[in-house]
Image (cartoon, rainbow, N blue to C red; front, side, top):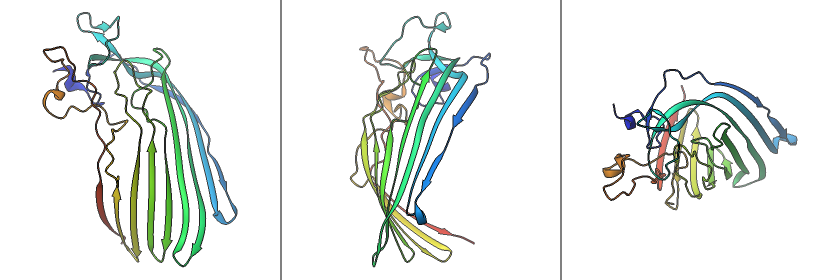
Length: 249
């Protein structure tokens, strides 16, 4: 079987395993701090965390001739990698907040938001871990009135610069999206509709992996002229419309 057919992580590389891999062992320290105002008029929640992972299953570039770790790193192309046990750490913080704004003839208005930061590091190689979401956040204006719920949401994702070196993980640019949502609840029936990515913003998904969907992008090998097919990230969805109905028995 070709090594690229063993890829289950979406980075475009070829993989072969190691029957002697050990199970990962992790220890996590986490806490949640929750503040609420009088009458639940506002709230803030913070969850910091730290995980130490022994025998983390990562990957190293492999020398095809000797079936051992490669002496030098080959960048800007897809490679054959070998799974291996190494030590790692993952830490970060999740923040959420909400606040009531006002109540008037148009309904009850409020604002909510979130911020998320995660860092993953391979303690043996010094490389950043694969598939770690960059700093991101969202803020939404919410309205409720007699069964109607409406939301205007802005989502922001920073550029992905911390990438896995052995896997030649693809960096992605930051982006911002506007989403709209409306819904109505009537007894057991809830109807919802919305538009995601209202302005049809072209963006690449930080955790989407490598695009290998057609033509030469489906090959991890270089072209005859020596050029590489490496470096195209999976694009995010364009402007999307959705409608849903939910009935509770």
